[in-house]
Image 1 (cartoon, helix red, strand yellow):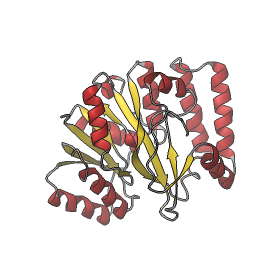
Image 2: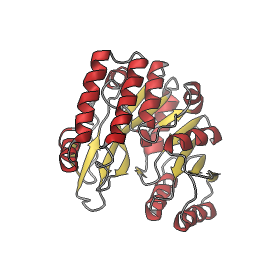
Image 3: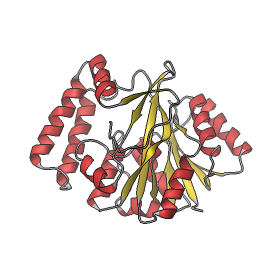
Image 4: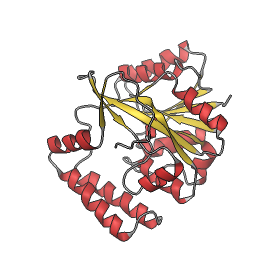
Length: 288
């Protein structure tokens, strides 16, 4: 059986009740993690501190707390957290997501049978607390070759559902300092260094989508990140200059759309609608 750490960054804007549900989903698994590493990305609210204290006192799983003096952003917090993880395999989850109860079983079983893989992830199901009857599945390419083709256009692995080898992530330079798309930047370097990647074609995680989620994917700051990622893809020989220009224009156009239209594009064309709680079928369809 693989020993593994679960890495969770948390900062003061997270809601305590969501964070509690995340931790509950991590410990109530068919395969239990060897440790949970929580990176406190700056000073937390009293409510969040109480959740951490409650779990320390009520679980037998080792919980390691990494306190940061100030908020440094997800990328830097994860880079610090990875170095603090005790085990070779690390599972990621965000502090407001919910892991399906056999997520770690599916991932550790796959890695036991296929130890040559460096990074694996899977499908996620997005849901909104205010409309629980309607959810959307974010499917991603499954095989290593499909993933390495698809990275030209969009991030090919769902970050919060990822599990990877610590040594492999450190070898490619760990996370950068980006506060958004830090995962895409990491996957680019993984492809450049020919790491082996895979997505389990099943839903591994339920991800909360708030009303302002698609607002965050617009504006000048977001366009700057788009330009940076496209430059990284080009610099690493993954896309051509023509593809770089085409991608930048298309994604920037989506980013400057009015919020309502941008949300429509994401939900209509980049997600698959499903009935809440319905198990996803296991095919290779890629919907983002």
